[in-house]
Length: 268
Image (cartoon, rainbow, N blue to C red; front, side, top):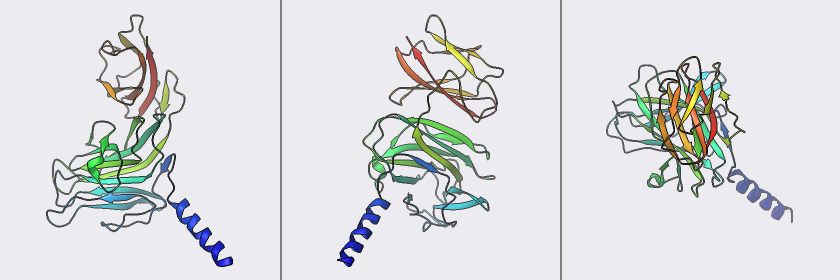
């Protein structure tokens, strides 16, 4: 009887260890540091690499920023234009009520590279990868925060796609991955920004009028389904939404200081 109970406990523990997760909050600090293709799988995160074209091969590393702070480093090796992928643990199928936020940068001295977040239905087959937004080209060695609405989907893996398009030996780094329910967004919902950002839909519903000291670097607008429907900069103190249909929209504002501000608005 005791052996049967023990076996049942072991099976339950194994099943629980690989259960789907509803949210992610991963800073990689609990990961074992190391370099090479053997670093993953780790803590249910996995990696997929392209076939190497020379030495050294592509690899995904866990690097220590400090004694208590790790991040993931995607190194392209001798490859160029060959994507490598970092895959999350299995998540509960997205219902369209959460956002994905992460930090990314190129390593000091590396050529620029790109990172693109997406979803996949099979963690070993990247032909199932579906982008959530356009790839971001990383030209700075300072971490920038990227926030993306995640639409409803049957795919259950969050995937980060790294590409060194400009040169071999590209080094891209990622940290602080958070997949969670979007907070209740007010007119100005600041995310690590010292700069106050206020805006409102103007009377004719054709533009967003901003009250801001410095023009944002970039503005992205997403539909309620998570599709990007507009992107650009201010013209004067306005952002054109004349082509948008009536409905609820999410807006991501990259401020002049490089911080991210997320909010929403309703076009009537």
